[in-house]
Every structure is written in structure tokens, then in C-alpha cells.
Amino acid sequence: MFLICVSYATIVRMGTTEWLNAFQLAITVFALVIVLFMGIVSVGGVSRVWQKSMEGNRLEFFNMDLNPMIRCTFWSVIIGNTFSWLGFVAVNPSGVQRFVSFSSISDARRVLVIFVVLAILAKLVSCFSGLIMFAKYFYCDPLSMGYMTHASEILPYFVLEVASKCPGLSGLFIAGLFSTALNTMSVALSKIATDTFDDIIAPCRTREFSKKDANYIIISIIIATSMISVAAVQIIGRLGSLLELFQCAYGITGGPVLGLFTLGVLFPVANKKGALTGALVSVLVMSSIIVQHQVDIWNKSLVYNTKEMRTYGCDIYSFLSINTNSSANELRSVEHEEAFSLAKISFHYYYFIGTLITVIIGLVVSWITRKEKDSIKNPYIFSPIIHKFLRPVYVPI
Image (cartoon, rainbow, N blue to C red):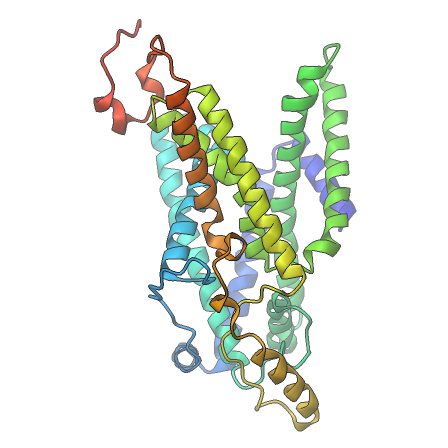
């Protein structure tokens, strides 16, 4: 898998793969739809899925608790996803490059609307997939029974069980899963390698690199980054869920980057000293919070409360496993009754906190270090929503 991913990332670097990516997406969507359809049939229909979800208290739409240490509430999900998606679409290079490649703003806007609709549908499908799996294992939780070691294994387990009566379906699903992973990882590896070359290696060069030399260097960076990623898998497996790890990783860098762009397009008073100071403080603060958060998870001192899972529908030979896991679940009870700690804040808020720290510190430092001669040379670099608040200046055409 490592060699395939590196080779694919190299191919993506060296050529256009739009049709290949579209084909991979089609395979993934087709496999997912077939698996979900068979899952619904095996459970007994959509109404059965909804009924079991209601009985298991899985349809919790409006938990309005303001406690930031609760993992998922209405506020944490709305605020967290708003800022993380804003960061991905508005300032993340991998997202921005796709939009700026269009020939006109109107085309980019149309694609953005399509992207938003498809992203919402993807989220809904993901949530409904979870409800289907919950209804499928309503009376016998495979994780509690020890049939798997991590909650992230539930989807492959579900696919293997549902697709067992349909030869080739599980292979099709794995193909779709690998296609998505290859596409995502190749874009990430290519972006990291290109940014490293452009921002670190190229400015320090003693001679001009040829195109061939530049490609060799970038490919070498891709290979090195891939090896580091493979080595990190052993550590990542002991940390939180993939969603939590994603939010933690982007909370360190994504929040400060979004804060920098927010300062640049919305606050004319912001200067480079304030922006740099705000970003550095945000990275340091978020790094300390997230590292401590992950250490607590590693040491099992931070365990989120879980909803009830049933095992009385399993076979009698697993009785000992049932008792063992029931005792383990009873220990997950009072994590949120402890004193307030920044490390225990829900990971959904990380992007928001990183952005907020950058903006606040950036504005304070900019105001302290401002100079009377500082002026707005080009108001059109700011967002149109603040143009009416800017002082009129002469801009040569």
C-alpha cells in the first residue's frame, strides 16, 4: 500500500488525473450506495432503522448544553464545522487551487454551490450509515463483544457481513475505499512536497534548479513524508478517532491560517507584526492544548462518556466477554465532572479557538505597533463588506 500510494502521488505530480479521480469517485459512490441499500434491507427498512435509532437515543439533534468539555453538542458541531469547512474551502491551498483554476468567478461560484450540496449529502449519508449499523447491531454490539479492537473497524465488519451473500461486493467496496484513500493521500503528499520545495528549499538554493532536478527533489520529499506517515500509524492507532485526530491536526495550523486571512481581509488596522505574533501565539497555545489532550487520551485519563450498547442478543458462549465489557463501560462515568481544563475542551472547538487567538492577539499587537503613516494603499484587497467603513483613498488605475 505504501509503494502504491507513493507511486500514485508521483503520477499525480507529473500529469493530469481529472478523469481518473472522477472514475475513483464513481466507484466509491457506487459501492457505498449498494452497501447501504443492502444494509437497509438486512435491517428491515428505513422505518426500522429510524425506530431503533430512537430507542437507542441516537437521534440527538439539539443538545444545547454550553459546557465546552462535552464532546458533541449542537454548539460544538455547528461552530466547529463552520470554521473547519470555512478554512478548508476559503484558505486551504488544496481547496483554493481548485476554485482559482476556473476561467471566471461565476464558474467558481457554481462549482462552489455544487460542492456545498454534495458535501451536505455526503455528511447525511455518513450519518445515516452510522444509524444503519447501529440498527443492524442493536442487540449485539461487536465492539463490546471483542469482535474488533477499535470502533473504526465497524464499517469493514458491517460490509463483510452484509456483502457475504453477494460475491464481489466487498471487493468493490474495498476498491472504492482504496480509491478514495489514494486520491486523498496523493493530493496531501503532493501539496506538502510542493510547499516544502517552494517555501523552504527554493529560497535557500545556491543555483537555479532545472525542471528535472525540481521534480526529483519533490519526489524525494514525497517518499520521505510517506515513510514518516507510515511510522506514525503505530502511534495514531492508540489515539482518538480519525475525526478527532483530523480536527486536532488542523487545529494547530488551520486555525492560525484562517485567522491570518481573516485579519488580512477584514481588519485594515492589522499589520505584519500583529499577524505574525498572533499566528505564533495561536500555534503555541493550540499545540500545548492538543498535545496534552492526546497525552490524556493515551494515558486513558480522558475517556468520553458513551451511550448504552446492548449485548444481550449475542450467543451465550460470549457471556464472559459480555460481563467484562459491561464492567468496563461502567467506568466511563464522571469524566466531565472534573475541574475545567483546556485539554478537555471538545476537539470541535480547536479550529475556532485557533482562529480567535490569532485575530485577537493580532489586533492587539497591531494596535500597539501601529504608526501614523500607516495607510490603506489599495482598499480592493479587503472584503467588499468592509469597503464602506474604509476611508476614501486615491487608487491609481
